Image 1 (cartoon, rainbow, N blue to C red):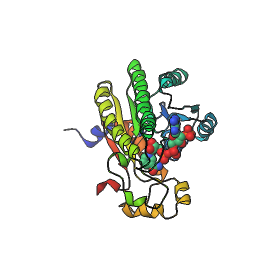
Image 2: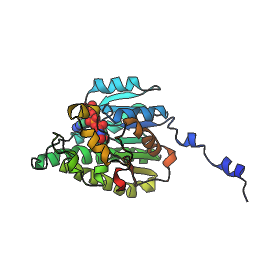
Image 3: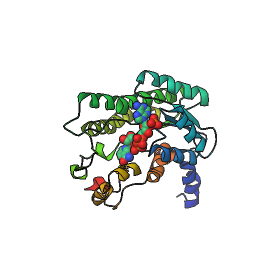
Length: 273
Ligand SMILES: NC(=O)c1ccc[n+]([C@@H]2O[C@H](COP(=O)([O-])OP(=O)(O)OC[C@H]3O[C@@H](n4cnc5c(N)ncnc54)[C@H](OP(=O)(O)O)[C@@H]3O)[C@@H](O)[C@H]2O)c1
């Protein structure tokens, strides 16, 4: 029988499993409310991080602020899906590799259910699902060419798993739009599909679904809204962006080497009842 010491010597230390040293990670929509914290997490774990924004200046400012060196801030508007393969190829050329992708950018509209149009559905799906797929496939193809493992993380939402909570929105000019629910649910399932196809290459695909993380600007413009959300959260409060840091590093790193096709909900317990 092997001793504890022998078994320990066969295992990797958990700090090593969580390390992203030597790896390159791309995160889209990085300059936003949640993206900036996740970008910092990837950099703190040792990755060289490629942060994107539609504004090159915003991306460059964020890249400059990250711990470590060699980070890149690049402009990326993902409405134009034709350019996404070239974007990934360009990063791989410039940095020599891409190991992880965090599909995070989203910019859909927020009309009420009565005012939602077909165009709201089409535009948001294009940016929030189609573009995620094209970027994921470009990274997967790069990894397959390199014969390297990798991790793709799709930022979905608790609203891809449970229905809206209409009472939270009554009286405010904020909505939980129909197309958002449809596309985030689709994204969770797309994640499973890609995981099934790419598992053979040791390319893991997972979703990370935030619960209620309203930006401070939402509360400033809608006093009382956050309290309504908090009443529904088992942990009794909304999330702070930094509370996604551990989850994104876990999914990007070897700490989750046997996890694929899953949806990790970071939601204060919203979806448990
Ligand atoms: N906050 C929450 O409570 C919450 C809850 C569940 C899920 N989520 C998900 O978490 C992710 C990040 O949300 P967030 O709250 O951080 O939102 P956010 O602050 O609005 O950040 C999203 C970023 O996406 C970028 N973007 C928008 N349209 C784009 C386009 N067409 N092409 C490329 N980039 C585009 C924008 O960056 P630039 O203006 O710099 O280009 C924006 O800052 C989203 O997928 C969202 O659905 C958020």
